[in-house]
Length: 255
Image (cartoon, rainbow, N blue to C red; front, side, top):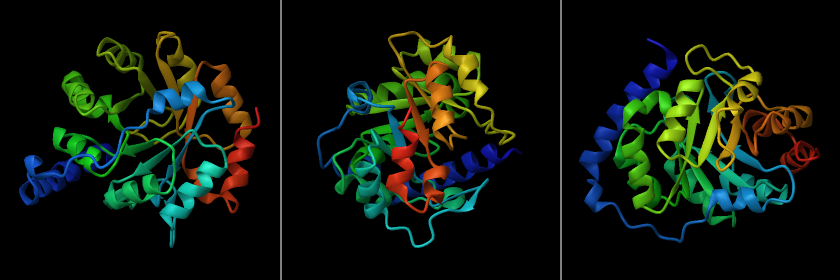
């Protein structure tokens, strides 16, 4: 069993528990209007960086000891982030749905829920906690992607559809995804290669937004990825490790 398989198995069990505790028809309605991540990327006057709040990860360990989510979100906005990605998976990434709400309440930026979405319940839950967009991973959803995109649209949210191969990109495009993420990390082997974005960009139509994810540490990385065809990048570990978060984000955006 791969790490991804383990995470998905635990996620399914966790979601079933939550569904019993709070059925979908008992979830509170969305408390705020939706902020468009796509619009924010298109309006950005510099390299668009989605900055991530990630307390820990299987590859990097603990990243956010004593993390103040609200303060981190404010620093990201001050550094010029175009949006904020918030990990909500608890076991492997130290995430929490409350972090999603906390981040959004402290900024004017769109907020992405980054988790392993395997049940439509999680999309409704994302709206309840204030997400403007959700991550959908093609390798987790397969042929179910179209249905999940429909649920996202019904709730007036956006989806960042994550791919790692040509076939996954083609599936995302065929399903109508407008925000397509290319993960430079293979979730099965955990290896990173920025050239994955370069290889897959050619299969993303010009009317879609390509977001490169994982392994982005320097302004040179950002330059390479934008030159390879990405319209935006998502940065997590490098920002979580930075002593001066605002300064690091500003450095990444000097291209």
